[in-house]
Length: 230
Image 1 (tube, rainbow, N blue to C red):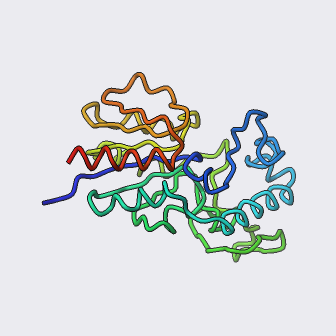
Image 2: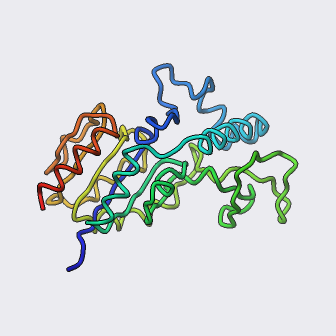
């Protein structure tokens, strides 16, 4: 018998408990920087050294941390479901927890590419420096989607939403588009489990089960709910 397809959309809240900070803090800063100064194409053109160092710090942070219980719980669901994860996160914690089908909407911090070619990717676990030049003559930049840039993976993520038998939303405020709009493509009849310490606005959706807890404890509760629904 084929497994039901479980589609999860995850955001910064699932990695926050591993120690990775989000940029939507109360002061609007990201590690002391305005988002506009470190995460836009304009910032890259204006001060590439600042942008490069900011993402070098992000990479060091990711490499220094480990998956938490929420990442591990999602991976454990693969035993009973055909799990597909669409994440807004640029870390590799889902993969390190054992999840096999992970789509990164906003890129991956452990990859880099030429500023002239967004398709040729290279693994990177050290700092990227401005004197690192690609074969096409462009500087290397982190493989992340900056604000004001298109999100090409959205086109691949939308069909997954339509195909969900079970949908799980973990650790996202549904404030960043186009990622937040993916939930609109989940069929009305599908059960939608929302795990977050502050449940986002989901009143427009049907069949929603809110689990207002941090990702780690919330995912443990979700596993119990799914186990009892079998």
